[in-house]
Image (cartoon, rainbow, N blue to C red; front, side):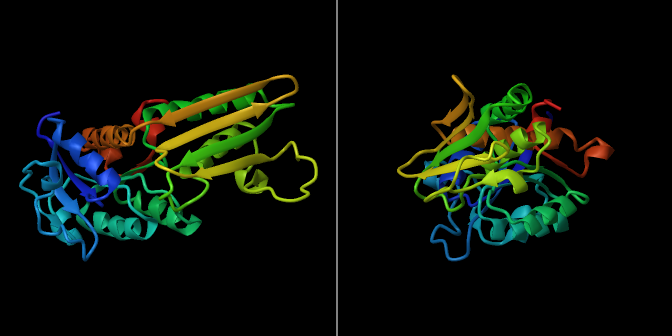
Length: 275
């Protein structure tokens, strides 16, 4: 790959931030260039590696301009409001961006799409290689099980997750709906309570579980008469998301010399060469 890719990590003191730091430190093709966190964090000014017992030479900062100067890629798993701030800064500094944040509004998603006309972005609600494969399998299954099968999506996450259903669950729903020629916004059912009547066969249902330290479980259920087909992915470590995100960063890094790839909106399907 040549010179190491210069990575900036947003939210580096959080759970995902810790895992991203570990994965960057373990990869010779990557180097930590910047470590961002929120204003008021008591760790600001300290070496970013200190929390892992390492010396990185990079101090944690809340100055986005300082962190992004001469960087290659920003990796962001924070909150939508923070992501929008980072998005604007990445455009200003011409830094590519990996967005693993979920819970964006339709307007915020449009802003990401607009920004991709200026910089290269990999935007995916789940950076896991396994989940990316699951999305493809769901599309294939939906095309085959296109009549007589009800589709339900069940997801479980830790007690700290703030959005529901998860971005991954919604992406799986979109994959199934697209394969069936439906619009998820029109056919999704996000909750059932009381006398709901019989199930509309054209709907796609979602069930959400929150509790404990569940990293992330997703099941797409195709329930027919006399049989069920279940496609499931279970994450046992956040490392799967971090490694996928850094693979995406390398994907963008390899596109630096390609004029057509200096900007654009990509997802993990592109990163893995599945489309």
